[in-house]
Length: 510
Image (cartoon, rainbow, N blue to C red):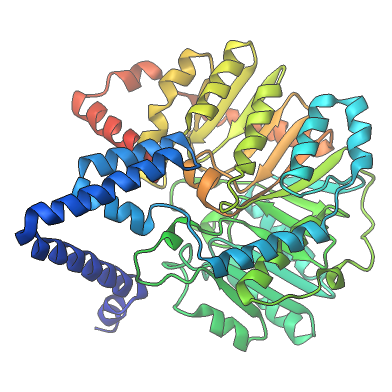
C-alpha cells in the first residue's frame, strides 16, 4: 500500500495529471466554442497562419521549422495554438535581462588572448580560424600550458573525480543534467558533506527535468541542510510552457578553479556500469588541469548567478596557484553553447572540424538526428576522400530515436561514410577527432535538442597528447562494433518503413 501511495503521489504522476487536465480544458474550451464554428475556425486558422509566418520568417533551423509547419498544417485548429504556447524559445524581458547579464559576466571574466591566435595563424590557419570563432563569437579564449587527460569510461572518470574532490581546499562546483542516488552519487555526496563541514564552498546545480525520475522532490533542500548550496535549473512545473524546451545538459565538475571535468558522464550508476540498463555503457570525459579550467569555472559561476539572481565577483574565485602537472603542449579551449543567443556554437565547431578534415574524422554519438547542414558536411567530406566513421549504439535507450537515427544511415553510407554500432550496448560518448590534430570532448549530441535547444559545453583540443588518446580509444572501440548492414536495413517490412518515415518528419521535435 505504501508503494502504491508513493507511486500515486509521485511528482511525475501529479505533473502528468496536471498537464492532462490543462489539455482537456483546452479541448473542452475548443469544443465549447465549436457552436460558433465559423467564427472559431476563422480565429484558430488565423492563429495557425500567424504561427507559420512567424516560423518561416524567424531565425532557426530549417528542419525544426518544417516539422512545426507540417504539424500545424495537419492540425490547423490545434497546431497554431500549441506552437504559440510552447513551440519556441522565447524569454520575457526580465529573463532576457538576466541572461544578458550572465553573458556579460562571462565576457568580462574571459578576455580574449590574441597572442595565441597570432601564433596559430602562422602555424596552422585552420586551427586559427576555429580559435578565432570560439574566442570572438562564443567569448571563450584558448589556453596553453594546460594538462588534459582523456577518460575513456565512466568508471575511469569516477575514480579520477573522487581523487580530485578529496584534494579540494577552497571550493567544489558541480553541474549535472542527471543525478541519481546510488554507488556513484552516494560516494561523491559523502565527500561533499565532509568538505562542506570543513569549510569548503560546495555548490551543486542539477537539471530538474533530467532528475525528475531520479531524485526526490525538492532534493535541493535536503542538500542545503547538509551544507551544500544547491540550485535546480528550471524547476519542472505542471504548466505547458516554452521553458520545457531548454534544459541544462552540461556536465561540469570544478575543484578550486584549477581542475575541471566535462564530457558525457552524469552522476548515476549506469554511467559507471554498476547497474545495467542498455548493455555495457560506453562513455567518456576529459580532465582539465591548469589555466583552461578557469573557463569551466566561469561557466558554472555565471549559471549560478543567473539561477540565484546574485552578482558575485567572479575574480574572487580565481585560483590562487596552479597545480604541478606534467609538461603539456598544444591548445585547449573549453566552450559553452547557449540556446537563447541564436548562435549554434556546438554545431559550428563540429561543422568546422568536418569541413577542414584532410585525412579522417571519427565520431562517437548516441543519437544521429541530422539537419541538412550536418548531413551535407558529412557526405561532402566522405565524397572528397576523407575517412569518415561514425559509432552509434546497438542497444538504444529510446527505440524511436534509434529508429530515426538509422533512417539517416543510407544516404550517409551511399556517400562513403562508414557507420558502426557498439555491439555490447549503449554508446553515450560525444567525441570528434580529426587528422591527429583536432578533437572535441563534450556534452553535445548530434541531434536537434543538443545543437539548438540545450545549454551545453565542450573542450576543443589542438595538438595535445589527448587527441591521440581519443583516436586510439575510437579505434579500440571499433573492435567491439559491427559495421552496419545496409542491405538488412533496406529489407524491412513496408509498415516499418512507413512508421520510420513518419517519425523522421518529426525528428527535430524529439
